Each structure stands twice: as C-alpha cells, then as structure tokens.
Image (cartoon, rainbow, N blue to C red; front, side, top):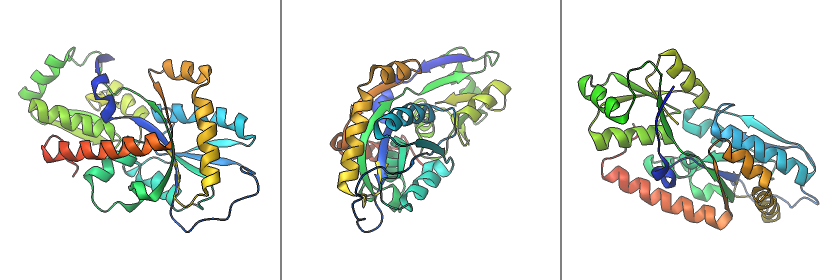
Length: 283
C-alpha cells in the first residue's frame, strides 16, 4: 500500500468525532438515577474503522465511570443517515447515543436540504471527542507513487480513476470532490459501507484509491446530558485514552457541548461556502 499523503491541513474540514444525545420528542421525566441499565453507543460506520475504534475506547472508559455496560452498535449506510435516524427515533432518555462525525452534523446539513434529523436543532450536544486525518493511499503495484503520478493518470484517463468513500456527503467523498475540482481531474467516487471494505478493495485492485460527534436527542433530560458531558470530559483526560488514539494517528479534542455547537455552526458555514464556490457538490 502506498500512502500518498495525509490531509492534515484539512482537519478542520473533516473527520471530527462527536457525541450527541438525540432530541426528538417532548421532554422525558428525569430518572431517579442515571444510568440504571445498558447505554447504547450507535456508530454510523462499520467495525474496524476510525470512528468505531474511537467509540470502543470511549465505551470502555464510560462503562467504568457510569457503572453500567456501554455497548457499541454499528449501523452503517446511507451516508450515516441509517444510524442517525435510528437514534433520533429512540426514547430521549440518554440510553441511546450517537457517536457521529462531521459528516452527520456539518457536511450533510450544509450540502443537502431537507434533512431535519441531521439538523443541530434535533440534537443535544455532549462533546467533541477527536480528529483523525484523511489519508490518500493506493495499491503498491498501482504505478501511482506520488500525487503527481495520480494527477497524470487522471488527466490521461478521465473518469477511469476510482476512489472509495463511505457515501455522498461523507468526509472521503468531500475531500475527493475538492481534489478533483482544485486540480481539474476527473476521478470517480465509489460508495462503501465502511473504510475496512474500501481498503480491502484497494488492496484487491477493485478500486484505485482510499480516502479515509457525541450526541443525544434534544428532549433528553438536561441532567442526563450534563452527567454524560461530565463523564466524557473525564474520559478524554485519561492518558490511556490519548495513548490509544495516538497509536491510530487520532488526536484527542476534549470539546464540551458549547465547543460542539460552535464547531458545527462554523463548519456548516464553511461547507456552504465551498459548495457555492463549486469546489464540492453532493448529487
């Protein structure tokens, strides 16, 4: 596998993991003690990918602090909307949380009209967890050893170069679209359910390239959201969490609920501007 580059300069555009509690129905009565049973952490990507790795580290630490099981439930598909809709329809009691990404809370709301379950108003932010770089990689025998090689191949064979994404509007899709627009190169996105499947097909020669938030529903009782935010912040200062993330080139963010709101609002503005400039487009 050839790693062409890691898109660190685009980190503020992509791949931020956030924890949210969904907010859909009227306010729920405050439980005597939270939690009293298993907490489910829904992840909109397949097992083995970056967001899944983040979720499993966080779930293990939250389990110890909350005194109840915290399980990871992978629900990939539809550019994160399958998982998002499932959490949005769950009871707003803090037991079903969404560990999503900038795709869910920034990219899709900015680029697609009519996605009420992805809107910020539908969610109770808990915190920002981490950022991870997007990497562009190719098969070792592809003949593409550098970005210049990629550009030359794309120019010589318009539309023939394919790159794997986790769906329209996701971080890999957006980065690929920006590369294509900026370099005037015709490369074709291919959708997958997760990054592990993308890498398998890159290695197998079926696709050319790989381009690799915490929340609850709004009606979740504020006391529950506050407890989750407090425990999440405690988890994120744990040195073992930072070490686990660093091994995967993931950077701990330690953002609280207010940081979450500001980040989402800023990113939505940024993506809309890029769309207006014609650098990104979601069909």
